[in-house]
Image 1 (spheres, rainbow, N blue to C red):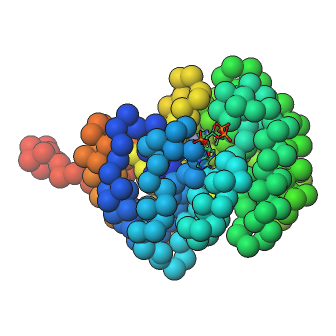
Image 2: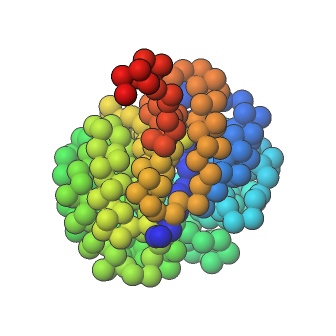
Length: 308
Ligand code: COA
Ligand code: ZN
């Protein structure tokens, strides 16, 4: 059974765009409960400027209050040097650096050119100096909502430049759900050949209903690491029309039904997914929490017995 590693990003990618601030205590409780479900990694929060992302202004407090479960890595988003200083102080297990492969999206999201972002992140990597493993998330790798196509070679070039700086992993992000399964297979195969020593993660959004199809394409091409978001919350505040990440529980349920080893306690995860609407105050897109697992059977109506 192939082992699949899931990183849940709901408290970062999901909560950063919620219209209402999620109380710190709710974030901490949710993370502690997710830790007990078997996630390999949890993206806890983001050390961005609290003015840019006010919903995650409690990053230090959340990192200070969560329990650290053995076997779970607690990663945080780090946009710049100031973020890295804060993340080091919070003893995060991994720093997730982020930039876009599209010039326009990078200007919109991070307010600088890609080259300036790369130089800034290179400085962060130098500053961290191997003290904490680094992952780099490359946004809009399957297309930009403003520019359109992002050539695979551009994504590969940025991945190579970061690999040369010694990062541990690269996450290929479909920030606005533009990827299709054929594109995902091509990208997955090529990246694994080019970077056999990197941890490669796929980060999909279900904006156009292609999320699970893309997970399937990636996993069948040999990818074993995925980002997902409890309930399918999430989205980029700087991407027009962006919507939720793939729902962790839907993707995990699919892979588990196919015989992959996700390491996740699915009934426990579904309990959390069912609590999420109360935490955020609205319904969430995930489907398995509503329908139950495909192996959860219903009693047949009584008249069926008479018809046998
Ligand atoms: N943590 C805390 N404060 C920060 C910070 C950080 N990581 N980075 C910048 N700041 C503060 C500065 O201290 C400064 O504060 P001041 O106005 O009180 O002096 C202010 O933010 C502006 O700083 P500046 O260096 O000009 O940064 P910026 O405004 O160009 O912001 C980013 C750059 C990347 C930090 C900011 O645009 C950002 O966080 N964007 C959100 C990116 C994101 O997370 N997107 C969603 C995920 S893909
Ligand atoms: Zn995302």
